[in-house]
Length: 320
Ligand code: F6P
Image (cartoon, rainbow, N blue to C red; front, side, top):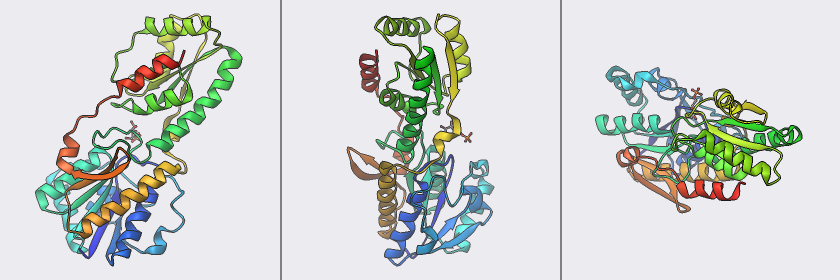
């Protein structure tokens, strides 16, 4: 394969730039040409294609966001959109494609492979950590660290006023950000889409912690359950303690990637190009038990994400 394309798609995630850098540099190492496609599949449909060289990816390893920009593209779900995307690839002589994104982005890549025979490799880039086939997605570690930082600050003021802080983090269907941020920031309660919550039980746990000498509490709630504002109203109605709501929001999607995310990005990007170089498409890369792996894209997108109940129990045991 002589010429490959690269795009970032869906919600951005810290580490996408580091992955772009790794893809471009690895491709050049193997004597391949790389074209960056701006604004994800929307840019592929609208022919926003730019050649990339060594220097075009300088000074980005530490930057959040994505240099190629990104979009959520509904047109890619239509036949016309897909035909147009493939026409752009053909026009530029692009033989294989690296797609950095989440579940939806992988479905686009799967179509290009299955329906048009374009070899594609998916790199899991999403803060949600909602892909079953990989232990971690790119951006998750940084996003959780950003949440921890915010919760540390909330803890100071909540403790001074003896309040309960309800902190909303991202995750529509997947509670991993809430779970990991909850455990690592010392939250007493997490509320996630995977587990039905019981407000009386939450009040009981808070009361028990106060009886044990705590002056404040942290509840981390995933956005998919309800907003922090809404949950605060429910909780305030049944607790004697003062409750305040905070939504961390898009702050958790930005910022300089952590060491873990830069490392993942470098390894994922490198692996993706090595596969294409060997003429292998139709794969996604990931990490399992600390090893970089690749697997069939169709199999990967059909796997249902499971929740780590053991970690949830750990939180329950050590938080009060
Ligand atoms: O998929 C990543 C994500 O950040 C989700 O956690 C969140 O629900 C969604 O994107 C927000 O999307 P947008 O930035 O388009 O509002």
